[in-house]
Length: 182
Image (cartoon, rainbow, N blue to C red; front, top):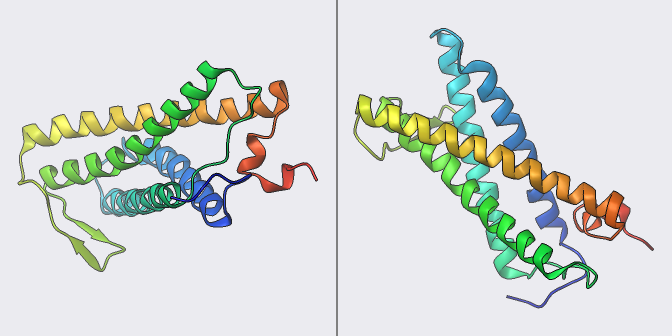
């Protein structure tokens, strides 16, 4: 890992925003189609939802790799110690959920008997056998993880806005370089 810098690199920024868009979009899409009656269209929506989940897993892995290769910028010296610790904890939870959400969906899909075929061409092996009871438990787990992820993402976004408009520091500018002071 290299030393800290004044800002995130362009690859980390791009992966951050791609992951954010995937999470928000896939969460909203999941809420939209989940209660639709079973039909060929709903099965197609499930496939798209799983593809987006796979992309979340990939971009999340990319974010973890970027974080491992290059330490994040230092938080402002004026930030209270408890807030710095809360920021780090929130990031750890976000990274954990970025992995758990797609993995729980993959497990659920496997237990429900619906193999994932990434982008319609790459079959992903099932990780558990078909089991109706397990599928129900995994569906509940997957939903719970995703609602938790949505809440943590909202908290993360609100904290960034707080830094911009209340604290008036540079934290939000780490991910929005056009906000940086010259």
